[in-house]
Length: 264
Image 1 (cartoon, rainbow, N blue to C red):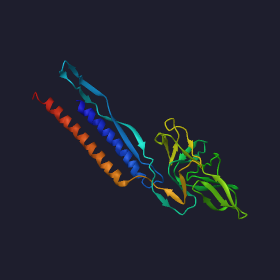
Image 2 (image 1 turned 180 degrees about the vertical axis):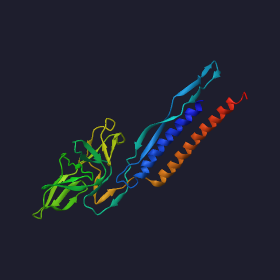
Image 3 (image 1 turned 90 degrees about the horizontal axis):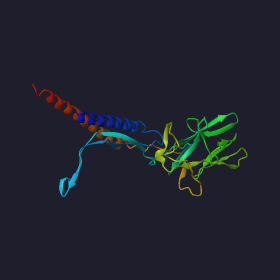
Image 4 (image 1 turned 45 degrees about the vertical axis):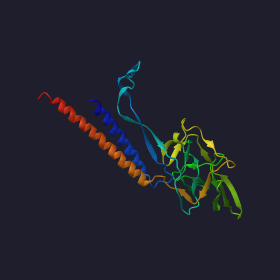
């Protein structure tokens, strides 16, 4: 009976939908997390009778029966989250579009909106890194190095990093690199608040200071853009859709049982 398999696809799809919603809710307090939404598409149709209209007679429409639903893709909503003040000079938030560019230990370029940066001390050198230890890059794709004895770090809205050196003079060290993409939804999530470029996203587009509308906020962090109320409503809707699909399976089973017992 076709209804059994059709309803089963609905249950599988809604189960995956609940998985996506659960991940959103689990990351409600994750810095700069972007919520995901599952998209669906219908499956193949069986044409029981084609439209056949000739000389004003016949059926003008097809008789088709669908075979259910399947998950087609997950889209990430890159809507900016709220800004939370932290009073930590190494916390940065991007106000607008764009990503910080970082380099993994294997040399791979990755991107993040999580500006929860730290200082990593290696001998006499101190460099700016992510909370996971990945190197934050300047506009020249170089490490951002702080010399020994520097204090009073300052970061302008354009990402220019300055500090007071040992002689008491304010020195500009580097400019934080910001990158954007033609299709941000094509980025691949790598965990740890990191994304990597793909063929779908296109190559990075360097955001020059002169043409940049995005600004960097020092001592702020971008919060998750997950709205708990919206996710709860979506979860209830998915649960009801799951229940009605299971009810369709139960009804189909009862109908088959009746058909099997007709001879008795």
